[in-house]
Length: 256
Image (tube, rainbow, N blue to C red; front, side, top):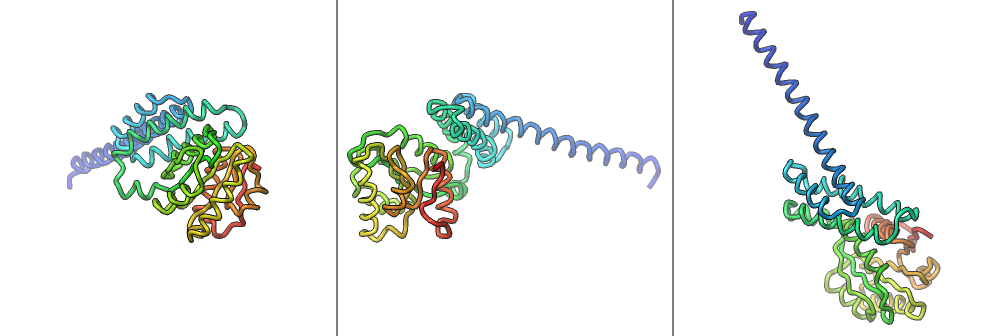
């Protein structure tokens, strides 16, 4: 091989190396910028910005699940921590959750069906117990669980115990979550647990309870598996129950 040809090949090899190296760097930088946009859109509660950033992620070949985990979810985690520290309040959390859901709706059609199943952490039946029509806290918990990857079956408020049990059986839920803000209605949480036991379902579902009159002591008394003070605490409890609930002492308490 002549010296001239060797020199030409060497130059081409060097050019190819720099093209790969810096082309990859440029791609990674762009991906990080898009992920930052996704997180920022959620933190600012901007649904339109979340949709634009999600579409930008798809247009640039970013894996949609990666975009959810490292963009949208990261923004929601920040909001959850700020909420726990009383740096933001309920309206901001709801706006952030709506923005995250808006971004997910753009990304979801590009996620293969088998990956969607993998992303689901489990099925949750949730509702406010009989005699209680309050649902703001319950709605927030349902939303936070949904954006955390759970499949939510929201029964609404003023729900008789048997409806919780029937829905758990119907959808084969992994968690039933009961909210209560009125002291006279809190005893229906115990009724649900007893009905689950009578139906042979108690060992097949984790039970979470919450609401202003509900305490860790009450959760322990009625045989519940988890209690959380705030919505992000409820997500943490749900994750622990689904991941290693059989190995932990009950009830799991967060925010107490």
